[in-house]
Image (cartoon, rainbow, N blue to C red; front, side, top):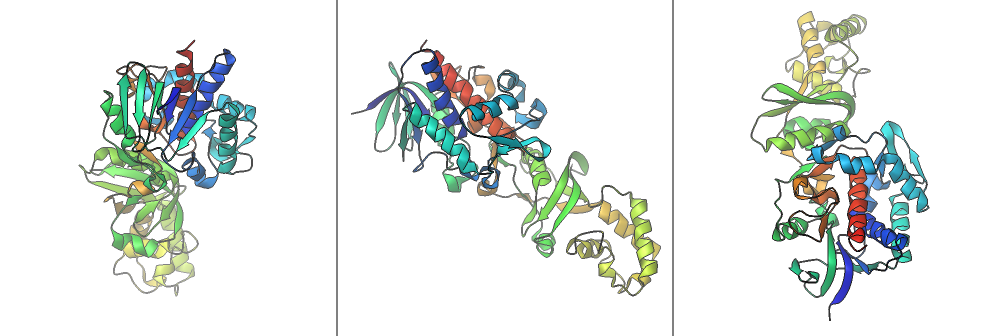
Length: 415
């Protein structure tokens, strides 16, 4: 016998949990009763939430603005204006979670544990009597006269309203899959091209492996057909396959838009505070002081000890043995390479390494209330939609904001 609900939320991640709690709060505020269920494919809700922010859960960012979002950001203003970073912090404080702001506006739970965030959310679900149906992998959603019939392989439920908050394709090892997009398309929606974002960029393994484990501050620029298209500053992390770090993640979204159609390179300025002429002077001075220094060590003290020799090798593949033997023209080449250390981009790492999905259901197909324009009674929220943000809490801010909007809107439809 099918279970019957008033609101069924498909997906027990950040946006789905926010939607369930917001719907329950709205009904209680208006002295209404309603049966709400969260349908989660994993054995418990919030599994991906526990992994966010390296296990610390970067809840939001005090610098939330349209400029930090991609995709259909022209449709975001109504939601972002309703739910500011301060609103999100106050909201979690009302649930009993203390937050604190750290570097670059990032906001975390005070104890820096993602589990604390999930704990307060689950307590709210319990308080309002929200049903958690875990191990419920939704295979179909059918529009019926009473609302919707939602099916898994083993079970069916009916619900007057459905909120689709099943997430994107990032982190398949935590249960992410394409089912949400398939469900949305079966109910009349379209979907843009999906690709990994906030992910490492791959390069020639022969260039990458000697640098594995090194970290260097840099100004990283993505070149497309030799032309600069975006620059990001931060620490670059060199891996066995390519380059990582927050600044690389920020460039990966722009690279993903190319769909492999154009030649791309990463250009690293390894000493962005110095001009090429100043670097030349530093090198000339070191050569004069340390004539017996191995040429490969010329950049020690300036660059990471793994990175420096690779810069020398790239600039001077047939370099002299000692610093004192280097000519001014050699030093000029080294200085230029420090400012323009180049790597061909051959692709991105796969979905399991990506933090977020770029692309999704167009926001033009969704009202400001998050209700579908093509299937009444259906609401959409979170990563499933064609919205993705920069590193730093912007994606979770969207998850909370869109989830709260969808939950409140679904509940208000009964008032």
